[in-house]
Length: 376
Image (cartoon, rainbow, N blue to C red):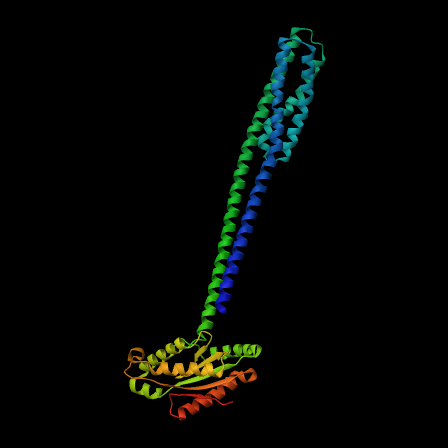
């Protein structure tokens, strides 16, 4: 039962650790995905504004070239439209820069250039609105237009490079931060795993200590405490099932004489051989315990008197057949048994034990090496 509890505890902790690992992995994944999304969103709009604005210098140069090659009022209208749109994009880019995480000192030169271009666009608009009748007026417009186109191209190119570098650096920082968080989570999981292993080991050690406290050191059989705990459980089971329970008390005959003759180490070997024979002759459901020096007990659940008597006699004959190879000494041993059976309240351990003890006393008084049955 306790082994099953330890096993269940181990599986429960393993399942809990797996669940915790899965949750942490999902949390890290969501964090990394959101972080990358926010990093991208932080610069995507600004990059889009700058890329759109970079078309203006190209359009401005193309329109100026067209006006130079083929003077026509349509080209002047296109140029006027550009002069109207360029300031709007400049203001949009300026606002985006102010909302970004870029250092103002990094984009200040480009922004100053754009501000200067925006101011001078008014001069270009005035030249467009005026009637261009002379080559001198046309050349002045072309010169101013090309100058503004050059400044626009430089400013937007600088901003584009600056934003891409900043986005790359921020992405790298976020990746490093994600890695650090992942390592911290792994470290936390390792600590949790260590604690779980420690708890499992502690539980196993407690189970081992508890089990050892119920086991006889010499024979490996259950001790008196184990017998009492198990007897109560089997008694309750007997009451529910209304089935008989039998108890046999066993006492090695003349064991003190054997100890005095061959010594205590030899006596210990005899007890070990005796315990092994008991385990081999009893059933798996039977409870075998050492309750004293050479005194043993067999508790037999769901066993009527006839079955208990057959088992007792089988044990008695087996013990008498133990030879020097089994005992370790050139001697033989015998055992006396007292047997009691009860049903219902009569199957209580104290009552069965008392009756079996009286039967054992009769077995010894009647010559030993025999089984006596208690009369209820």
